[in-house]
Image (cartoon, rainbow, N blue to C red; front, side, top):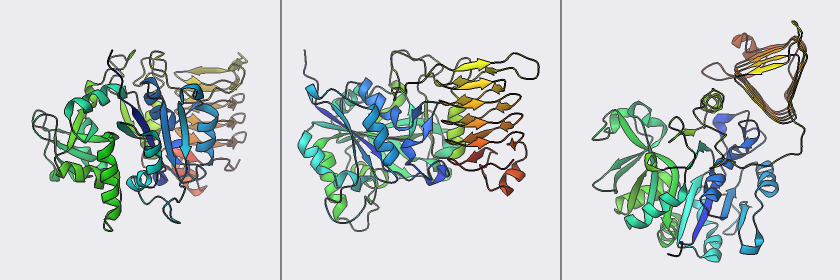
Amino acid sequence: MAKRPHVLGMVLAGGEGNRLWPLTRDRAKPAVPFGGCYRLVDFAISNLVNGRYLRVAVLTQYKSHSLDRHIAQTWRMSPLLNNYVMSVPAQMRLGRRWFEGSADAIYQNMNLIADEDPEYICVFGADHIYRMDPEQMVDAHIASGAGVTVAAIKVPRSEASRFGVLVPAAGDRIAKFKEKPAPDEIDGLPDDPDYVFASMGNYVFTTKTLVDAVRADAENKESAHDMGGNIITMLVDAGRAAVYDFAKNRVPGATERDAGYWRDVGTLDSYYEAQMDLISVHPVFNLYNQEWPIHTMQISLPPAKFVFDDEERRGMAVDSIVSAGAIVAGGAVRRSILSPQVTVHASSVVEDSVLMHGVEIGRRAVVRKAILDKGVKVPAGARIGVDPEEDRQRGFTVSPSGVVVIGKGDPVPA
């Protein structure tokens, strides 16, 4: 049996996530809750661990306390075989400065690479929703002989300005990389001109290539020290970058409907839409695939509870996800996600919404198309998401598509 290559996982989890404000007001973007009981970072780490890469460094920076705590409490690996998932904050090993970009984050943590001495390094983003077997991508990288392999997914050419776009060359090489181009600045794929290849922010590097690239980048005073815009561009120009088509990745237990699913949840609207993808009868992204589970912290809580069956107060939830410890006490929940320890009181209505840990909905309240962060208390009779203009006047955030967002613990007037 051939020996498996020695692979280190590095998860870039230091982003501020300004476009997810107010959900990132008190936490790093990768620590934002998702799907009832998960955090965004759980998806990248689960993919690495399910792929049998059991040595993972999570590079953190901004407002990292809840993220560090989540990793410490959740991702405990066996020390017997020197396996670990560890959060690594900015240590200022090279001077009194924060990380100045994703490439600089790796440069400032070169000691991790020296200590582990891997043959290959998976550098994954921490804030996307997807399933992926990284071992298949590593195998493709080794076969390519490239210095770096970039995971890519087809997106409509009209959406090119949201992504780093790859122009494929002959074989598996990348001819050009352009960061967030306008649609008229980039050609479509030769076999599908209405689509382009977008970088997923997941890379497999041969270790020497990554080390040499981030060192060269650190010496460039004009660089933004960005993995995509600088490191990948440098290696594409040198002819050392290959593309890995995410559509070829086969994850055990995937259905035709959710195979190849990937969502960048960088805005409130994309975050909300990805949550809504979870709750249909045949979900676009299936949380219930036990052959490739998404792991997270398991809290000791009682099962969810539904009480009262009267005409005026019937405890019910349909087309929804209801987490442990939630109590639906005579309210009606439709097309929504209830996180642990949510309480929905009598005669209230919750529709098309995401309620995070410990949210309480008072009697006769109405909540529609909203995201309520942890600990929000909606008083009896209050209305959220019924009149967006009124919500704006009350100081709530309203996304471009009309999703009302209330920050962690923010008061809601009666």
